[in-house]
Amino acid sequence: MKLLHTADLHLHKDKPDRLEILGWIIETGNAQNVEQIIIAGDLFDSDADASSLRPEVRDLFAATSASILIIPGNHDAHSYGRDYDYGAHVTQVTENPYRIIQDHGLCIAAIPFQEKPFSECLENLPEDIDVLIAHGTLYDPSFIFSVIDDIETKYMPIFPKNLEDRARYVALGHLHSRFTTLNYAGTHVVYPGSPISLDTKCTTPRACALVDINEHEIAIQRLAVDPAPYWEQKDFFVFPGNEDTILEGIRQFLKTADPQRIQPYIIVCGYSGKGDKDYRRTLDTITTHFRPMFRDFVLEQHIESWTNLIQHRMVQRFIQKTEHLEEPLRMKLYSITFPILSKVLR
Image (cartoon, rainbow, N blue to C red; front, side, top):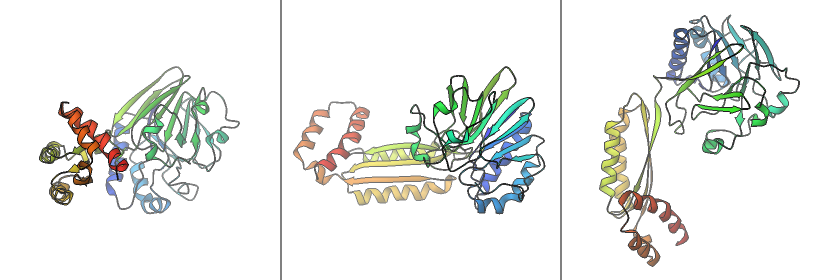
């Protein structure tokens, strides 16, 4: 059986580009001859958006012969049920704590979002599950702390021990930032990430999971969502003497970035010897010039005046001691040290 696993489209009535990505997923599923499309929660940004967009989504779903399996997420927990029509070949899982589905000789356990720990949803779950679907927060220290700002951590907490030997493939939703694969005692676990860039934490190309699974084997492929742009973060540290170099570096990045693929996320921090007000004004001018060229654009400024800090003897000595260092290393050292010194020496 060939599956396409996605999640977290957060369809919104005022963001038509998200519907376009759903259409691309359906078309790609057809081209890949998938037999089932799994949407692991938060198809809609809210229940109100589901009410507005249901007819359009139903039309998109009608364009595939694949079966479509949807579980509710925390954003669209009340968007499914007998009263809602998504098409004849769409399965909406609303039964708590789970529903068992037999399809193409595989046993699928689908767990809709619930206001309780994931472990409680697993009670009495049958053995020999091939595919398990859920929407929640997986607390694995190998990666969770790098994406913790992306999520509301109270929702459906999942721990690695909950997944060990629980299924052959676990299709998760809820983490937006990136495509993540993990393995617990032979259980393959995948967060596909949102196929669109929902926020500035989405700094890698967008993707879905293409899964080929039968009784004996499983193959997982990261499938790039080509039409979806993603954020590219660039950090710049300003220091007296390199102000103009930084401005030119920002302009060069924006001139060469592909506006069809990249959404620039620029963070400028540091200290200006030319006066922080004038420097901010120049950055505002750059923002005004380049913003229309991209689908989305963010330039954050955290610029302080250098005057007060440089008057301190400790700072002057620190600069003297580090002047011999190569420029990239020196700027990196300053970017770490000066914010601390600024707070300590106030």
